[in-house]
Amino acid sequence: MSEEIRRIMAAIEKAIILEVSELTRAPPNVVWVTEVSRCIRQSFYSRIFIRSPDFGAAYTILRGRLLHEVILKNMPIGVTEVEEGTRSITVEGAGGRVEIRGRADMVIGDYVVDLKTSERAPERLPEEYRDQVQLYMELYGKSKGLVVYITRDGLKYFYEERDEGRISKLKEKALKLSRALRENRLPEAEVGVWCRWCVWSTQELCPEGYSYKSVGR
Ligand code: SF4
Image (cartoon, rainbow, N blue to C red):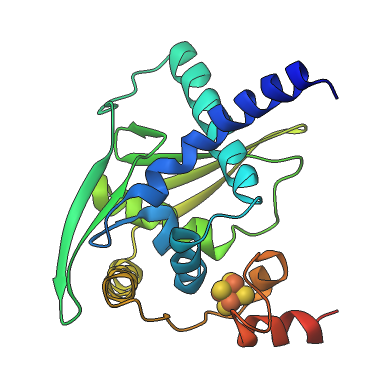
């Protein structure tokens, strides 16, 4: 690769990676919906360390934003409450005070709509995405959630009814993550099938996740 091509490639990569910088730039008393809906130990590490797989995260975010813009531009029915920037709520508890931030793809009537792109849609909605749409319902004050997969074979949707118990647990997780970041203390591991793809599942950083992954091999 010539030096000139190397610089062009590096510039494109940097432009894409800058998309995730807002996630890692947030102060410890602010957490994102996407950080709360997955394992908070994973989110903790992703705040502190930068690794090359962050390009994957940046790509996913960029793809989502482009998709959002294209669909929004062409929507034949009214999309309400679409606004620039993000929504947030403040949660207080024994763990202190935290602001949860996020931006839903669309808000239409009673519904918060979250768009996903994938080769194929899953049979069941992953727990992480259920949690995300629950938090968006809370952020936008809505009672119904729709997660819509855009795939090669067409659209598939999953309906989520607002679940106050689930939202309360997610607020507790947000408080725990914020406290862990403030005190530089590792949060508990949330071991599950997702550990197989987690970049932090090493013996040193997360022995629980590493054991789970090793047994599953
Ligand atoms: S390996 Fe599993 S438990 Fe450990 S940080 Fe990653 S997702 Fe969390």
